[in-house]
Amino acid sequence: MSSESTEAWAGWYRDRAGAEAVAITATGGQVSTRIRGVEYTGATFAALRSEGGALLSSCVLEWDMPLPVVLDGAVQHATLGCLLTLGEPAGGGAGLDRSDLSLTLHHGGAAYEVAVADGDFDDALGRIDRQLPPGAGLVRREPAEA
Image 1 (cartoon, rainbow, N blue to C red):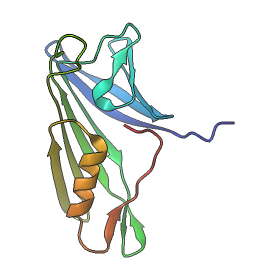
Image 2: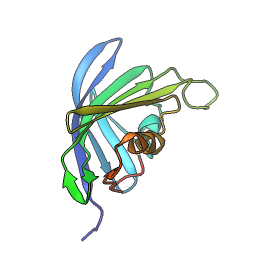
Image 3: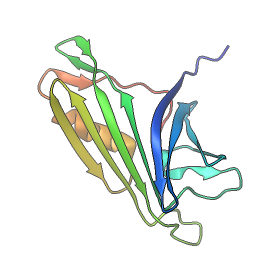
């Protein structure tokens, strides 16, 4: 039996053709989602590729996920709102021309926001963690390095 955990979050996918509900999963260092019948998987949210190798691009992914906060030693419920905007393919297999990630942590009646231009999820979480009041910190889990 595997010790890897799987997490799943409900969200929305939007592009020029419209919007649809999606499920985003993270397990074993990979994130994945199915959009219009096509499965996308990658090591990060900004590097999702189809089985055929096409990079997910020119779209927006939006989802909420629980992210507990420890305040003075007590674990409290918090929700992290995530908005990822993926730009156009950069050409020559160089990835995307942009990957913008906005995170908002809702906790204790306050909202802590951050936006990063490179889509680095861990960097964005670190920035939110530094905004929290003294005695508070994010409870980090490691199901996927996304």
